[in-house]
Image 1: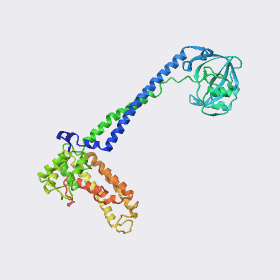
Image 2: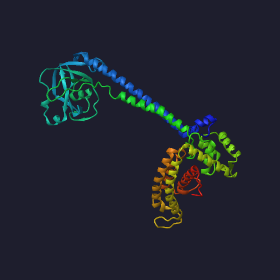
Image 3: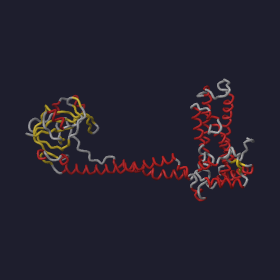
Image 4: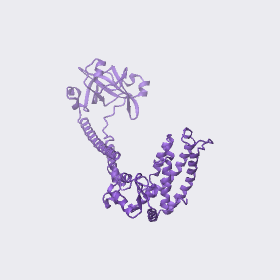
Length: 459
């Protein structure tokens, strides 16, 4: 492994400094906020579950407390009489009747039939039952009329809601205040769901006493919380234990000598600027400088011209790097695999060289131009060929990245360059001093050559 404060830390956490960059700090903050939110949502669902259970217990106890005469409850607090079983004696006024639309029962659409019930001096709205909509539209009101004269019935007290619209005799909610105005009566702020029904009417279903989905929702939220709590740190640990500098040293094999990684990087990139190493490797300037000075003392690297800056390989350093690359590849047991991948790459490389030749000569669709940096190349045959070629090289990068992690991000770098070319930024195909498609291709090939110990001139 490469750089970090102490040698022991270097071997364990070479990329930890990268996780302190602004984008990663924002990621940490977002994940922490999501953990807080998901944990509290899980607690909230358990609170809802407790509320549901408490309500169910209250409803069950009041329904099972036995029935009382309705007039005895008038004047009491509404919260204390809801769901009480009551007995009523009186007559129905069929001239004052409405229908609560958009009701369902056992999956059947229909309406609730609500009729004024007169008990001497007192009046109350009674929900007489559920009527399937098909019968409501095709039958006569007399088919679901209650018995004439004095009626004895039992029911459950339900608090009045707020009507949100309707048309004519059809309403959306049983609203006692609205019914009072409609019927010119002083009704209490509740109604009674009748326990028995007459004719075509079905009894209104009792209040739902199930616990609902709150428990399963709580488990889901806590599952998300656990995944984030355990998974995100594991991702960070994995990232921190990898080297981060483009595709050269990112994720090299465990046990690779830091000096080999530096020599290998110089072989591929040609030169190194110390600040690039410090930023890319997430290391300390003093540690990086120490490795460079050791390599310089061994005459394996040398400083470039003062104006250019950075470091380059010496012939001895190139030879030493090749020996270390061969030893690393043999130790990994991946030499046959890399040889096979390189043969596949050479086939794709032929198409790339042809594409580069056409780019330089401008021989696209039979038209000769000085070069392809003009409108004729945008979205034309050249871009189509590049997209097709990219599909082939992406498969090679994917296979390589799974076996040798130092090749892990070439695919992404190709994708970024291709997207810029497709967008019309043609410099992203072959411009040097930037991560253009050609630059990444050249580096990938050089990495394969250096890994296998093959001289580019011979190829």
